[in-house]
Image 1 (cartoon, rainbow, N blue to C red):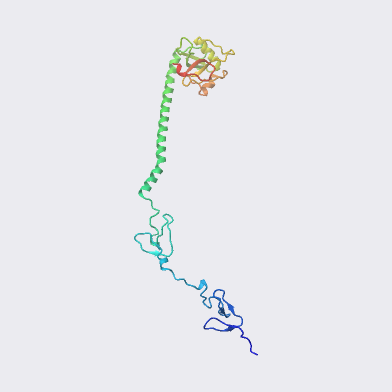
Image 2: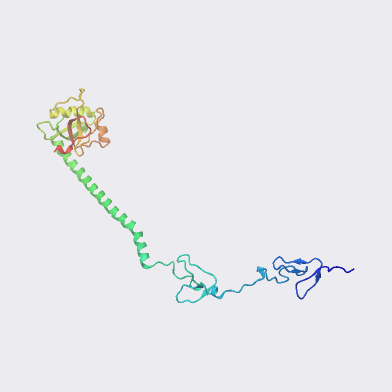
Length: 267
């Protein structure tokens, strides 16, 4: 009785060993012995790791340097992050990030513009401050001169000590026939209510502040028509200390229930 053929031969030409435990390559499907079953042992033509692909000559010339004076090519594309173009290693610093003279000039102008605007605004503010300071000095000087004049012709209670006398030029109510302003003095330790009573007596006008009539005699600032104060129990000295009143100031005495009057009518 003949025995059936046992085992199979290795597919490697120089081996051809008969092996009972034959191995089949998963790539090329050929059979190999235990010495040549690995893809590297039999140089498997179907395994990608063993295949050296031939580079396409066209592909090697695909990436040509963008620099006009350069003809070098590369299989690796090197893109500039700024202009998105390919450059070789020799021309990778091609000045793409460098700004033109026009761009530099525009950026310089944009940088200098805030400084220019600030300089203009500062000059305007400085001029306004200087003008206000000049007006303030002139106003203070004019008020000092007026105070000296008022002291020479003001009328008031002789019982007021000289040290407590405060002088004002009072513009009388519009309904008074004799509308010329009067120079008066009051005491700085009087209330504003008592001061109004005294000024009304000096000018010789009716005073109904002690009645329920809503229209009262009030003192107003001659520069803006604003009431000096509505509370009649405030001391004159307190108003002077708070710079609400000043010695030698022009004031308007008027019948009103409002806090503002048209100061332009009193001249």
